[in-house]
Image (cartoon, rainbow, N blue to C red; front, side, top):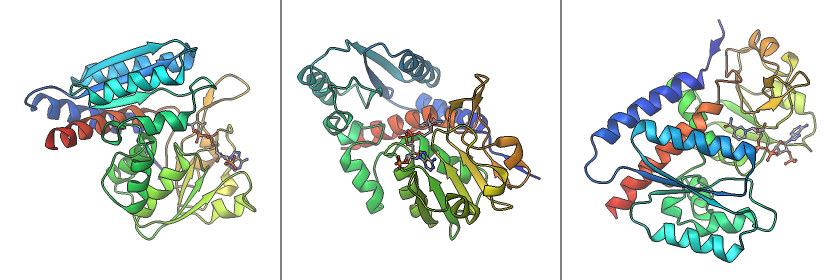
Amino acid sequence: MTLVLSGRKYAGVVKASLKNRVSDLQGLPPGLTVIMVGDDPASKVYVAAKEKACKKVGFNSHVIHLPAEISKADILSVIDRLNADCAVHGILVQLPLPDHIPAGLIASAVLPEKDVDGFHPVNVGRLWRGEEGLFPCTPSGIVGLLHHHDIRMSGKKALIVGRSNIVGKPMAALLLRENCTVTVAHSRTADLTGQCRDADILIVAVGKPEMVQRDWVKPGAVVVDVGMNRNSDGKLVGDVAYDDVFAVCSAITPVPGGVGPLTIAFLLENTFKARAKLLAK
Ligand code: NDP
């Protein structure tokens, strides 16, 4: 029988555990500050969801709204101030940023110890070197979800479709750390279908509605669908044709309710971890 990997349920477990751990803390609770530049409607929804999740587990949370026309120098000085603020343990700059503010510059400005998105080059390096650090939330959540369901990763062939800095590449590094044999596919990959069919663990992070079909999937494979797309009927769907693939795989994440809820849960985990490390310094 196919196992449904519910990220929603697992995120609930992670958040309940965080709430307990926060109530046991002495001193300041974990503090997350989110910087939002401009008025992107989707970003507003994500930022509000992060704020709500923080409150629920007992974190301090602040949102700094900055105008879309803000200069690079001014946003960098806001980040500097937060880097120096002892009550702020995590800093997240909501993406996308306006075109005149390079995301790479901003990621590098956040103190690595407060970089709860895991985008700072120091944390990227630590991830690939197998060291301790703060790592991107979505792929960390996926590894947590697979562990939670006792899905064996060691020795398995993992294929990640998508090579973004936010999902695909850190996913590859994390699965390598779990001793998977990892392949990363992308838009120039030859015989993508054949590559997918060879995978024991198939992670799809592309952004193309229901691209992965039933005959792309090896019978018994574990399928993780990161995609969040609207199909032609306006329905939220993943990158995997869920109903068809469900019939052949051994486990699969649904959309919605699969990977989506993990991102915020692991943002909270990262903030908790960042606080502990900062206080131990
Ligand atoms: P990006 O657009 O940054 O990257 C997409 C990747 O898919 C690229 O590496 C691209 O290849 C590859 N790709 C595009 N078309 C194809 C194709 N036809 N065949 C094979 N590979 C292809 O996206 P993200 O990684 O940021 O996000 C991917 C999806 O995951 C989106 O739907 C997004 O909404 C969702 N997402 C969900 C999150 C969640 O919390 N659930 C969090 C983050 C993302 P190339 O590099 O060659 O261009």
